Image (cartoon, rainbow, N blue to C red; front, side, top):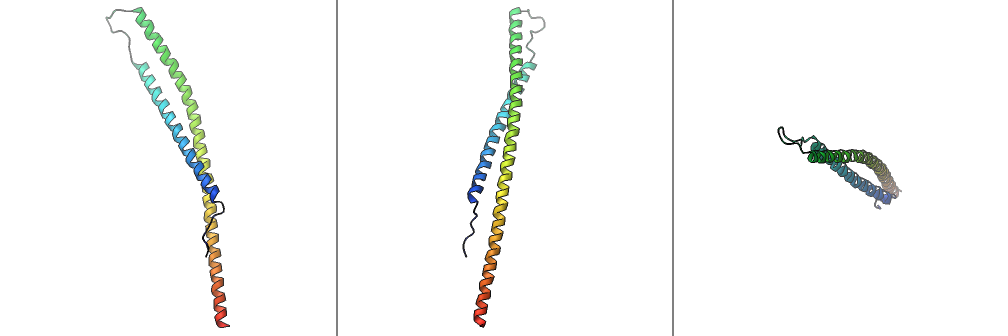
Amino acid sequence: MKRFTFSLEAVLKQRAARLEAAQRALGAHQQAYAALLAAIEDDEAALRVDDAPQVGALFDPRQAALRGRHRAALRAALDQKRADLKAAQAALEAAQATVTRAYADLKVMERLKEKARVAWAHEALVAEQKEADEQSQLRRG
């Protein structure tokens, strides 16, 4: 009896490779998203720090202006990071959709392979039964 071969094995392997590539891309997007979240949290924490002069300390207008510019720069950077986070979230969702599609495509091919294997096994049983019937007829007749 001949071995089972799936005629679309190359397509199955290609779809499995596509799924692996999509999963790697998704992981990279997840890492970028997490890094942006961490950076935003750090900037928000820096903005929450009260670096105003202590009560009773002398007021230095140059220091106050410098603090104001620093806080404005932090807010601008935070706004940019939030915009980048929205873009990263969209890219992450697109990568997740790609993984979902690749997984579905792979499952279709796996189901086709299993159906082909069942059909091959059935044909093998039919052929075996036919051979047994012929052997039986030759003995009798």
